[in-house]
Structure formats: C-alpha cells, structure tokens
Amino acid sequence: MLQGARTRPSTVLVLGGGGMRGMAHVGVLKALARLGIGYDAIIGTSIGSLIGALAAGGVPLKRMEEIVSNLQKEDYFKLNFVKFLLKGVRASSVYRGDTFRERLASMLPELDFESMKVPFFCNAVCLETGGLAFWGTPGMRDISLLDAVYSSCCLPGIFEPFERDGYHYMDGGIVDPLPLRFAKALHPDLIIAVDLTVKATFKTPNYKDRVVSTLYRSFEIAEEIIVEQLLHMHQDRSTVLIQPKVGHLSRFEFSDVPEVVRLGEEETLRVITSHAATRQLVRADVLDGLACPVTPRDYVSIRIDSNACIGCGNCEMVCETQAFWAQGEKAEVRKLSNYECTRDHACARNCPTGAIHLGNL
Picture 1 (cartoon, helix red, strand yellow):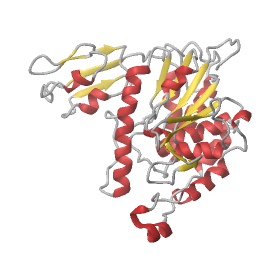
Picture 2 (cartoon, rainbow, N blue to C red):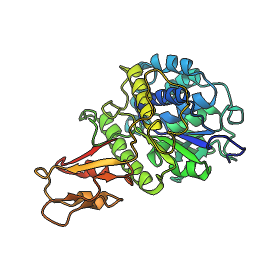
Picture 3 (spheres, rainbow, N blue to C red):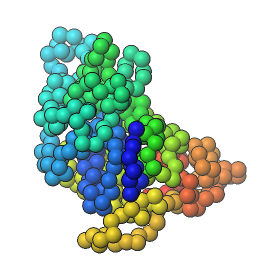
Picture 4 (spheres, helix red, strand yellow):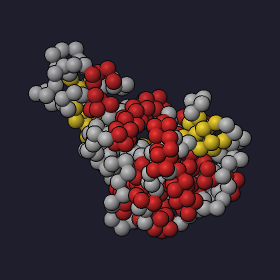
C-alpha cells in the first residue's frame, strides 16, 4: 500500500490506546517534527485514532496543542440519567455517546478518508462477530471520519456502540490496542509504535473500588496483556517502540494535559535519537537542548534482587527471550543486557515479590 521512491525509509506511525494518556501522542508528533522524521501512514486505536486523525488530516501541531489543552472532563462524560431511569441495567452505556460525538465533531477536520493528507486507518471491534474493522482500508472508506473515530474510541459500557448495517462497533483496543500486525501488512521499512499501556515497572494509578474504576482497570489489565503478546509476536529491529512514562496517570486524568504532552515529546526524542533503526535519520543540524550522539538504548538491563526472589519461576515462564534461569532455589539472569527484550515488562509484572528490576528503558 505504501508506494513511491523515497530518500528515507517508508514509515508507518502506530498510535496506541490509553485514554487521556493519549495526549502524549501530541508530544510524539512534536518530537518527530523537531527531528525531521516523516511518516507515510498513521494507524490509530482508541485515543490514538483521534490524535492520528488530526495529524493525518493536516491539523497543525500548535492547533492540536490548543485543542487538547482545553479538554475538560465534563465535555465528554455526561451520565445517561434518563436511560438509567427508564431502562436501569438494560441501558446501553453509563455516559451519553451523543455528548462525546459532539465534542469529537468540534475537533476533527471535515475530511473523508480519501482526502486525508496522509493515509489514515483506525480500528474498531464488531460486537456481533468479534472481528476487527480497519476503517480506511479498501472497501471500508464509506464511513465518515467522525463515525470511524467514535467507534474506535467508545469504551464498552461507557459510551453507546456505533451501529452500522445492523452491527455494533466499539473500541478497537479491546482486541488490538497496538496494531503492529496491520502496520506490517502495509510493508513499510520502519514502524514507529507508541505504547501507552500501564507498565509494572512504572508507578500505576490508584485503584478505587467503584464500578467504573473496576471497568477501567480490568480493561487496562487485559489491554496490557494483549500488547505483551503483540510485542512477542511482531516487534523486531525495524520496529521502534516508544513508551512514554505516563502509566501513573488514571485513564481519564484531565488535570495536567501539557505535562502529558511533554512526557510524550521527551520520550520520543530519547528513543528516536538512540534507537539503531532511527538514530541515523535524525536531522543533521544541532537542536537546542538535544545532544548527539547519545547512549544507545537498544537493550534492556535486567537484574534480580536475590533477597526478594522466592524461586517461583514466573520470570522464566513469561519471558519470550529466555532471559532467566529458574533452575535452583533462586532465579538467575541469563542476559544482563538483553538485546532481544520486547520491552513488554511481563517479567516484572508477573513477579509476585517485585524482585525483578529493568533498566535502560
């Protein structure tokens, strides 16, 4: 699908889901522009579909920052009081989807898929079949940009599903929160993927024992495990993985959007300038506040606190790159500098005592 001669590698940008953590995607776009890194297609999931649609539609970065800086929770989340009074637990959602759609309509460019400045795709899952729809692919472009982004963003139980031809569609992150498989199907030379799932080695948001909080957290845990499997199967040396340190934020944290944008920009600058697949692509002129060459970060350092390790063997079980031995009373590290590590953090997340520590992330 990606055609034409280029002086740089053909590049697909993948923007993953993560609620308001997705404002980090704006920082990612700022960093790529600053470094002179272009892209030939954008794939978005959930909040990544919104930011991806803005970028692919040609919305200037300054305008994007203005849009996201003015986001307020009450603009999106209005309870379905009437439906709850009339239907009770039979209501289709906790919050009103029409309020969310109106806000999306005020932000998105008035373009269709054929008119986008950069080819754009976003996913949603069909509730009847369980199958994925990738809006923007041949045969799947006869949908408005608003409907496509709404369907990709509407979390189950939070907003009403999008209905089309008798089928109902919801957040694509339910089954594919980081669409690396689809990105590979475009046959690019390079994939830049932004993963916003909560990682075990970062501070996680506080969990509150409430219905909506339980729904959010359950979705996040499933999302992280799916991303773990996707990274195991599809990450390779041509995939540049950016993981902004935003895991400490709740899924719908609106209080400090500019800081989230900054974290996305900071992490992207660090990764792009240090990854083997991209560090030679960085523009040659000196950028203020950025020094090259930088320390390569192509590997993950691993260590185990032997005092905390109980020898359960979980690390050896979940690590797809055989970085651990669990043959004796305590587990041992086989790869202190693991160049094959997929950065899924599965070992640390599954360690019951927190004995595993990952570095150079």
